[in-house]
Image: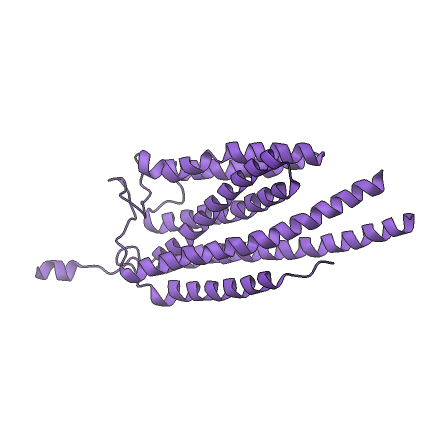
Length: 58
Length: 232
């Protein structure tokens, strides 16, 4: 029992993998949110332009 | 221009608050796992990402059935939105899982049944987006998308069940796993609470993003119909 106490090891040192994992999770989420925002903005611009063109044609 | 619905604003706020709480629980509430150490914390959001992925693929299949039955293009918009979001979250689940595997199995990737079926599932839906791009006629595109989303969904239960059917080293979180599983651990009550809360939070994230993506899809459909009109 005394031997097992001295041989007992703590958790593995895996902090860098945790950081890498969460960097990917937060990073991808952030990029997707930005992409949604940019696409939304561009589509609104396109719509305004198309509506203007339609008005002129009338 | 259409204004943002009040319910969506509320959903945005609730989702942000839930997400902040989930992050806090992962890093400050859940205890350190005794064997794997810090990398085990990836597990909470890794599974939650995979959950969103599978949930979205299921929504896309249901939207596909609804489109084929009713022929309403709003279901095509819902299906596309669900697939896009799920593809992003499932990708994150695969990559974060790979990082977790490096920390706990000592390898980035192995052709294990779960990893293989997950990669196939991701590729099936990536192909859905690419093939849609190649079809110009909106009706044909929607029909194709609906059929593809229904057939593609076969890969989802296959991925989910792979660790329960085949011999695998991937741990099973819910239910009993294979004897050869590596990296499995017993969850303490705090770990279980963090895990369940992460799943709950990511369900809200999915609902919130889906609503935003559907609004974007409606804008895109409007722009496309105006473009076709001006071309004629």
